[in-house]
Length: 342
Image (cartoon, rainbow, N blue to C red; front, side):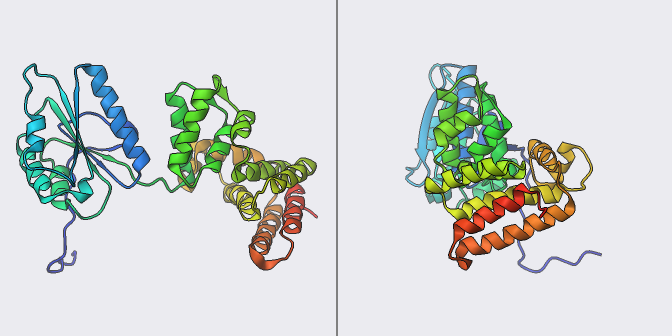
């Protein structure tokens, strides 16, 4: 028998409304856009506006700041207009909402105007929890668009791939990996890079295009070195390494690029199943699985162990364990290019 709940323990609020990904946003009387990922939230709200505008060009759009709110503003904006135009009310800063806004919003949930879409942007925190709980319980007939931070590489690849797909542009797997690797630490920069490539290039984006635009990014050069070494092209890898270092590349992310690829290969060595199945199992994209399987050609388990040991050594040396980080990198390139064989 389950143990009784402790006195005073909080019971999580029941979620009775649809929870959607940012790319699945759709209209409803209340659209709660929650989560810390600002880029995804902005995309969701923009896409919703475009959907509603396409459905009715007479759409009226209004903006409110929940933290700087005067009592009665929400009801005034949501009131039926003379000609019955549909309305979109975008409310920012609900995580900093004033008491007046929370009170008015709770009242509005009881009798929402079904010709009006009210978007509530809540970036996290406990402020406004009662309002969020009421919405999630189904009051007001809303939906929630969850915009959580993208932490896994596979999620960032999916985001970037969707950017190109939505724009009708094709991008090769290598080019996609290069641009994501170059901007993996900042989703806003990644989105901006995708936007630039989409607007400035032809129907298909390949590795040469990405290198022309962003070849100065350390991570792009790092993965170019790793790709050549893993494929056994020692000369190409060494030349690319020296060019990257001469361009100011930091040895630490160079080793990190090798580690990312070799560890993925090691995970998949001996694994059986389809690309999609293994992608789900290991938190990767299917194309990453496919590429790693291709790169495993010619590698055996002993070679992977030797490469992983060399990676550990190089990582320690480029982080201060050796006076000659360049020599450590060149040794790593040699070992990996030989697929771990002496």
